[in-house]
Amino acid sequence: MGELRKIPNIGKATERDLTEMGYTTIESLKGKSAQQLYEEECALRGYVLDRCQLYLYRAVEYWLNTAGADPRRCRWWYFMDEYIQPSPCGAVCAACARFPDACGGCRSIKGKVWWLAYAGMERCPVYDCCVNGKGQGDCGGCPQLPCDKFMYDPTISDEQNESNLAAMLKNLGRK
Image (cartoon, rainbow, N blue to C red; front, side):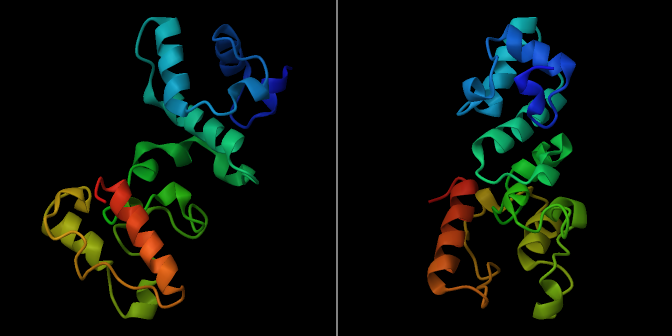
């Protein structure tokens, strides 16, 4: 067993693929994006691979490039598009501390997020408007973005609320 097999999700076949692509050590993979690895392997094979290989490489990227990466969060299926792409509000489920143990992701739970019990609501108002009201995948194309449905979190500072909103808007392609 080579060094690469120490990385979660790397089995014999993926270790062989990475070695054929020129990656023989963990250090040689650091800084590489999942997209780069996926495209390199597609080029090596001469065809477009199943997206599951991209998801696996996303998990590898997380493990390699995240200080203190949680091995429980390294399962490749947690890096599927639905968890990596911004949710309706622009949050990225896979980046949330509550994912996947306390929350399965906005699309999976259909906007019934954990904090609703404290807000006296049945469904996240952003999710409800965007997905149920307008039939959109996210709020990125909405001319009212950000609107009053984006809520202030009273458990964090004003600065953190502003930072979170800025990150969500960036994820949605807005500044």
